[in-house]
Length: 100
Image 1 (cartoon, one colour):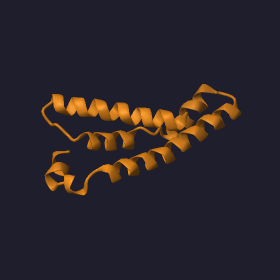
Image 2 (tube, helix red, strand yellow):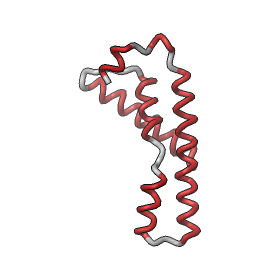
Image 3 (cartoon, rainbow, N blue to C red):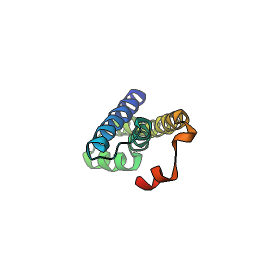
């Protein structure tokens, strides 16, 4: 579930970013938007732990959810690196970075 959720979140975030940036007049390549999606899609294990402690869930369920959250981070790193390697190196210019 962690792999599918992180990939789905990355793609949806990338698509929304692509559409929104184009809508405001700053069209970005889709791969850049996917990179952004890959950066923000994994859940934060520390934030998840804080919410779970307030919910007072059974310890076994809490550990499973925290474990999945940690697994999301690993999936996010791999996903980011895969998309980064898909970006043609000549596609990145200093002006692109300054626009962001």
